[in-house]
Amino acid sequence: MKKEILIWNLFIVMFVYSPRGDILKNTKLRIAWIIPNVFCYLMLFGLSIWIVANGEGLQEINRLSFYVIFMLLLFLVSVFGSYRIWTWIKEGKI
Image (cartoon, rainbow, N blue to C red; front, side, top):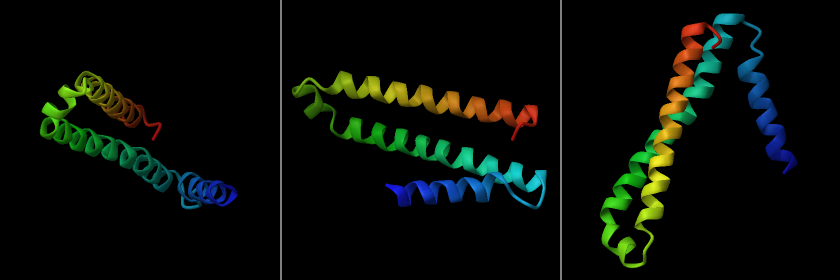
């Protein structure tokens, strides 16, 4: 646990507190926010394919609605994250 926290803190220090100036800091900060958002979209894409492929089985065990709701929530989180990143870039925060 302590090792993971140390690695995460090192990651934050490397990407947020860059000694080269604001331009590099903003680029690294953008990457730090955009990469998880891209993975969120990839997860949404994979989940959608999985739900379509296993829809009949999920319907038989009455879990299809649960996964569809989860997929919609994941879509909303992805879109909100993209919108937030876009507004931060537009405002010059990152």
